[in-house]
Image (tube, rainbow, N blue to C red; front, side):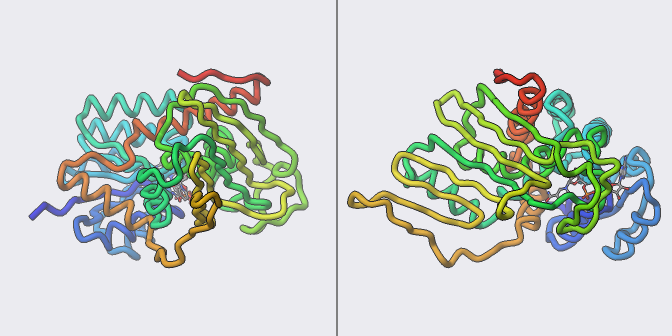
Length: 346
Ligand SMILES: NC(=O)c1ccc[n+]([C@@H]2O[C@H](COP(=O)([O-])OP(=O)(O)OC[C@H]3O[C@@H](n4cnc5c(N)ncnc54)[C@H](O)[C@@H]3O)[C@@H](O)[C@H]2O)c1
């Protein structure tokens, strides 16, 4: 029988609490410590999830020899710092998305994981959805043919988080593109078969978020500290000739919120949010969306997969070496918008 994986969680905010709950439900893991710079938050989370030790410094938590792995659930600005500390202390890491503020930081993390011979997985939970896995199987079986175009949409009409630091560029690295865009770009790219991006053209807009008088789905946000983009549109070209169109927003004057993607091949198409499948048969494009895919707990599936990889020394299902490509695309979109030209990727 595999040993129980002992885990420490860094950051006990919105997503940290999810990690705590899922590790405690996972049969192969046990949370032994929680760390937050806010001592009260760490204490409240520890009480709720029956965690024996709390810390306000990740360094002190990492001194616990029994910890095998940590989850990094802090704002983006801390992802690299906590991950590097954990790797050099010999711990495996599950890092929240985006892997880092930019691809340069992500590469430093990848190099450190390689050197430490420890696992580094990125929490891109949308890959673990039952509908995503179904579409992945359909595409891998060749049912839509060769994917050549995809749309990746993460649009909130008025959805600036009213908690955390999501509107602050220096702490997050960007706005909706790096926060929610990262989920859908990664999921779309994964469904397309992870083609190599070669060029990116994008434009960001700043029209609403930093101005007063708007109420969003999460209530009022701090418009005074808001200095990230509201909306982004971009086109990514891949080495195999395929393209991906991206739209991402915290606030935009469109007709509806969308969080999904659609992948188009030469024999059909398939998408998520909502799930839909089109397949060409007898000269017609048929709608063949299944109606019986049960919703799963994508966060539980992600944590279970990470724990399983650590416990059985298997490759992690979302390695940092894959996650870095979405971050390279995002970096290039911001650079393209700033420079007003297409950016080539290597
Ligand atoms: N996968 C998802 O669906 C999902 C959802 C929400 C957030 N996230 C990601 O999770 C991260 C955190 O987001 P959140 O919504 O939980 O934010 P949050 O503000 O609710 O929580 C962050 C917590 O980290 C603590 N913290 C900050 N710096 C720290 C440090 N150096 N050491 C220890 N604790 C520290 C804060 O006090 C806070 O409690 C972000 O990177 C975000 O992109 C992922």
